[in-house]
Image 1: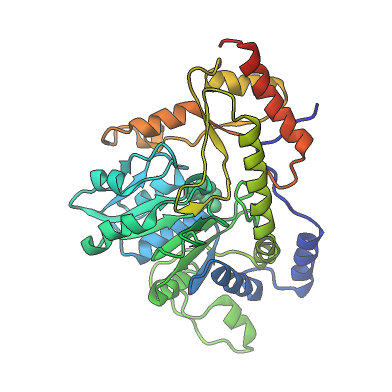
Image 2: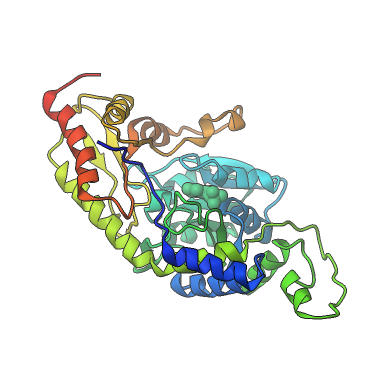
Length: 381
Ligand SMILES: *Cc1c(COP(=O)(O)O)cnc(C)c1O
């Protein structure tokens, strides 16, 4: 038996060649590859503008800046998300307001958002949690007339679809992650996509210190024009080294998603008769990339979530606790919030199974057999 990891990035000779080419070109910082990656990403995600940045965390931060969110504003976010979603509100001096989620998808809904709205709400961050598409249209119908910006956190969502289009395409502004735990990776990296040219322009400026002349432009001229710093910006740039990897990875996205969906279906079928296990699945309105294939453990399954995790570890299977609840973290201690019963239920009772492109059926069977062994022997925790 060898260790089965929860996730492994799929990187190979093409990525090595792409990075080598960038190094040999002598230009490694933000430059032509970043521009090419942005163009390819915008086309694939069916959005007019894409701006590459250093992570999804910085993408969320910039999205709120360009949307004009700041001190005194409230930003509705799911607690059931990686903590960067809530932190984005704090970065701009706004206050996160936690919304609960739907038990089937793990995503906010129009009803949970409505419950969390305050007179100060200026933005809502919706998440395609674990790659399960969020039901965006209903939430925009609620928020647009109230002049509340809906930001989509599609960190996990590359390759998932909503109403027949890529997730994120229906939002005014969307943030993406290229961390190795996600579907397309550049080591670290992120992207902002938007339907608004003015927001894309401002994001491009702000990611590079709000410099009136970009570093790439200055490099092109022998006597560069003097640059000005138009406002207080940031260094949120992606490098050409990363973008070169991203271009290769993006070309593999369809293949990766198809394989993940195949493996997810195989898990579901192999464990369909085990009582007390519920798998997350495609919602009626879209398809998931299963970036995180989670299942909920409940009675009459003989072990609780912690028990099953420990049992899997004994079988050398590295599963993970489900999505975190941000409201329970010390960083948000003392922040008032309404009841979050579904968030708490899911965060306590779900686990994420190993799933990655190169996973073999033998590796998957190691996971399945370990789960079935408990189910059939009736071991109790
Ligand atoms: C991973 C993740 C992030 C953060 O992405 P980084 O690129 O690591 O900054 C933000 N939101 C969600 C929902 C995530 O899963």
